[in-house]
Length: 281
Image (cartoon, rainbow, N blue to C red; front, side, top):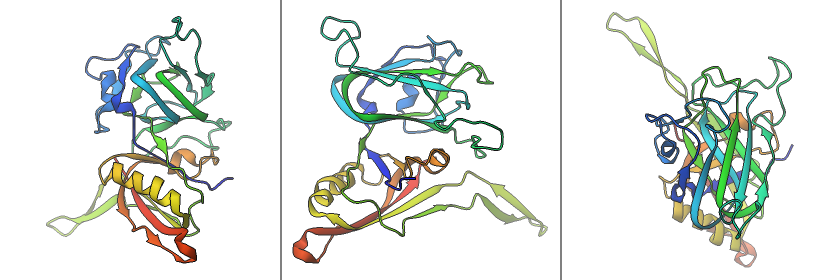
């Protein structure tokens, strides 16, 4: 299993125009561009023509991953991403520049109820990871979803995210930590009886980069901090090759704490830094 974590920032999907498919008027496709995850897009049914959509940009963008956050997809769901530099089939671009082919929502598959089942006890909605396997540059992106076994007879998506991957020369250091806020508060009634107020738990990741290259620290990490601040979303995938746990420990987040970029010895060719990421719910 690789421990080379991936962090995506600078979500470009907010600048695209969403179209296609058939979506409930009360839960329109544009809800996927809203910051509140409670505002979802919901297809009218599960037919192929209803559950696909297109993101169109005025100029080419470059990304290597598309995330659909807060979905209600089940273990049988599949997806496909196709990218174009001009309208599909037009004289300027008769063929796609990228085609993922149809892939499974759950990469390792689910062979039995006790293995790798999708667990979502706090009803946050499982994210779909469309990891493209390469960097793709295109202006028109088509996402197709296939989930005819979905029990509620529609597909729901809370957020679309198409970001830039933070490119570091070194992996995060030993000592990175994962935490969950307690999801149950204990309160006391006037009569003295205890009762419990359960809420969604919030996940956090803390990463340290004690010996990052000088150029990477100033060109990548500092840029990410400048663009995101404490309010712009990121998506963290700490263990991208661990398909059994990737869903459980990857999430939409913001930077809750950004350490200083500290110059080190050896001619200042190394920089020490780190940051804390806190889940958006």
